[in-house]
Length: 424
Image 1 (cartoon, rainbow, N blue to C red):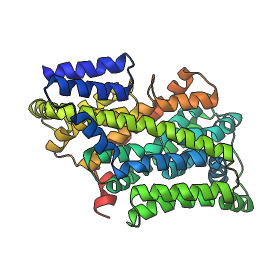
Image 2 (spheres, helix red, strand yellow; image 1 turned 120 degrees about the horizontal axis):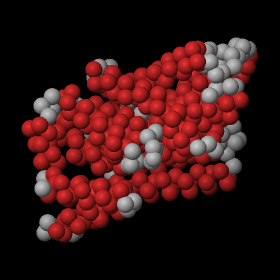
Image 3 (cartoon, one colour; image 1 turned 90 degrees about the horizontal axis):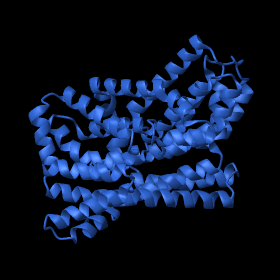
């Protein structure tokens, strides 16, 4: 009964739009006081949270992605990819997806990925005859690659909350990330081939391909550098984020000369605002997590699941439905922080690997990024395209189906996530 009352209080506060950080922290503190526990546990939990070295990666990755965004890197990256695949069926759509994948490997941010590539690709695709709803859906879904293909801020937070290796999580995201890229490309090519809505293009000259690739090459190398130093053990994710930020400054400030002082200040300010919001949510979630642990809520939920759901498949089906429903009203990071402490013990009891479960959670959280009414990527694309939310929402439906298909494949083929970090 206590568990039900606490969950009702949590969802009621969130549904009446109390900020997530204050909902989690305030409810956690109230539970500590009502349970007769020391209120000093709350500041102790917050201090232990914000003292984590791994969380330094969050502002550094945000700085890197915002510097690249303000430096206009997306335009050069899109031009280079388009030069190579633009003549394919649906070539512009393919170029958009590949560009999203590459920028995702640089930034770790879905919003930055959608905004950066969307600013360039949306007017280009519409001018070439692509259906607007398809274009909006493609960009909104392509942006979600930013939190799956490493580096990934939600994976950093998941690793911090669960005390799992962030490096292993990053590597586990590579396979599913590439799978989603392949599924999106296949759908885009089939859609263009059978439903038209685009203007075929002649192949680009070799000279133009080389020149555009040379201009975009530093940005592509940056993605390899960030992942490379993490994979080889040269640097931790936090140190890799710092290296990536420094290299991003060199690329946009000295090589491309596209980053102005005003652009840098805007990038720093936007990164600061986002970082504060994320850390407030993390701190509040830590207090709430401490409280529900003392009330043994995760153990009770795990016991309930164990008594009523006795197969891994049934567990995944139920959890997927719950996460999809939550995605209608909660943003991505909140879902990770609220549901992970509750679901992970039950998942591990049923034999799921915590690294695999982290990747699964992130894929489901990606769905939340493109489900109305609070899917952040929908609003990003709506803002960039100056279109209606209804058009963007309708456009993402086939891509949402493909993302759910990737969950099915991930469940049936666990090595898709676990092979690279543990067996390669």
